Image 1 (tube, helix red, strand yellow):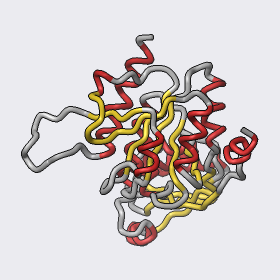
Image 2 (cartoon, one colour):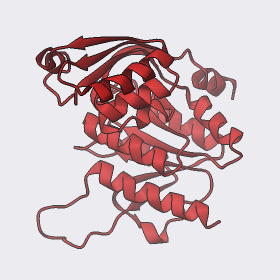
Image 3 (cartoon, helix red, strand yellow):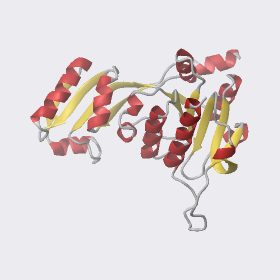
Image 4 (tube, one colour):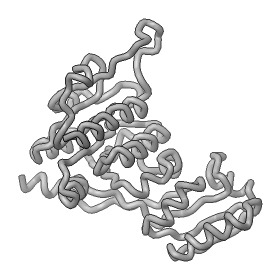
Length: 261
């Protein structure tokens, strides 16, 4: 148990990142996280400029007006909606932080583990749904999956600035640690028990696998159960849901069950 406590409480990892898009930047500025600079396109309406200037002042950030083309170049050609911000640090939580968040709310833990999600839009969508469905946090691997980038922040509509994200060195060990904390761990995969016959109430962690290969073999083996979603269009060549769509369906069902307890 001492080993697990050391693993869960390892030093937090911090990274600088560029966040862009109106809602993600607004949520970042409201979140209380340190922000260095906010860039606003010179084509942005003055009323909108005033809104972001006010948020930036509250966050202690500097604002700069820049040509829209330069802002697009800064964001790697992505759609920036006229605003971007440099977060001074994105601070990843520990697994223990996520469990503690559940304790503070006097709720059974509800976590989402992303085992090798590589598309930042999928990770962002999962984080967004996790926040809206009442999860206490999302867990991602340090290697073998995307981190919280500007694209992830935008795809999450700012939810990644609100919901704790833990970045662990070993996803299999994270599953073991959760089970030792009496959290039941289920993975979403083909061939599992149908959702309607799976008990996802109580302390639960949901594992979503990578877009190509799904949940890794070891993590799958360690899970307490496997849950699958029924499909109406079998035999069409479209043989699975998008991972973020599947995660949203499962998380909504977990939220519904928890509210009905």
